[in-house]
Length: 252
Image (cartoon, rainbow, N blue to C red; front, side, top):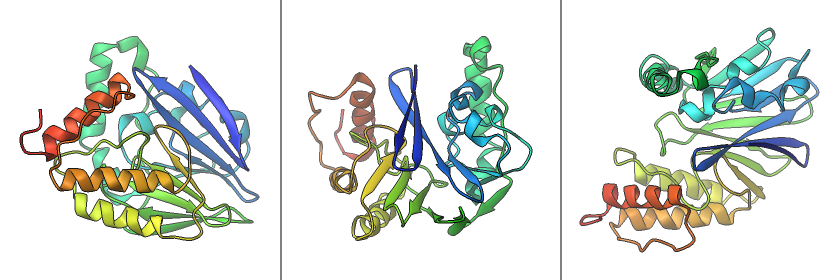
């Protein structure tokens, strides 16, 4: 199932993938169109395709997890740039093809249309994309993965958060730099321009999403074994348990 909705000048499309949802964003500009993540399959870009034809297109990968990058073949390939962090391109030589091979072996018909299309341009810390009347600023924010980035539209007060935050809670790998993750989120939390946070997974909201995620990450960093909220879906219940096992001594 796929949905599309408008939020100000932005277009948001969302698909459900086996227990969790994932969201992409289209930002129309006078000079070019930006698509933030291409989801898991070329078909997932059907809603954005009419808005990207005959336009200069910039695709941004928030990071190289499969549910954010496998839909690129569903968009025009003529006048386009694909932007991501340096480490994202490296992942296209390692776990990205491995993950596709594993999923194709399990469900060959489902994934045969997927083409792995790596970034054409990468950056280390920051990158700006001019839309004509506004600018999208990309910032490295390692945490969920080392190659994770966020995007900020200061004129709209919108933070495209990727997987840096999630609602109700983030996935926190055992090997991540949790201290840096918390510090970087804290910088955005204090930014007075920020009004709207759009995570790749879960509900859209305001700065309170950052507050909630920071509080959760801090409790993990302290090794605090947290009870499972009764309202969690099966997917996020399992995610929470995995986080606790990874970060809390004695977690089950």
